[in-house]
Length: 134
Image (tube, rainbow, N blue to C red; front, top):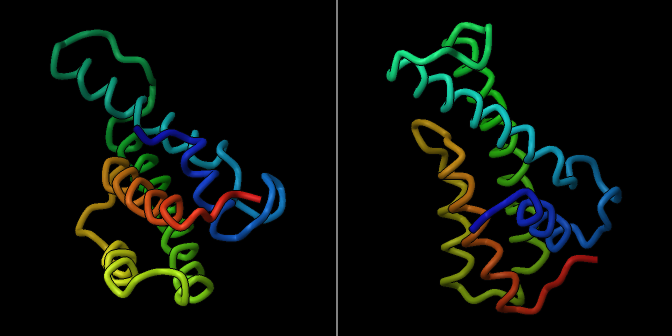
């Protein structure tokens, strides 16, 4: 299961920094995505069930916020993977490099599930090669 700390650890593995060693290498950045996604999903569900809404924002605005946060995290993760590919290309197998490069292909719609999948796959490759956070 991917959570905010998985996000942080992956970036720390790639950049070899501590929590505050580089901009956006902080679990709180990912938690913003979790919060906006949860709010959007709960309000969408409440609308479908004709229940009271959680937010006073329009559902379109909540969806927009979720999409913005998704794109932001996707951008941070893909930039890190690109840097990691060049930094650790001598360590990874050709198949692993191909797998990591395939993660960089932008989907039609970026979702939290897609981002979580990227984090999980990349994290497993880094762990396999014993590349640990600083």
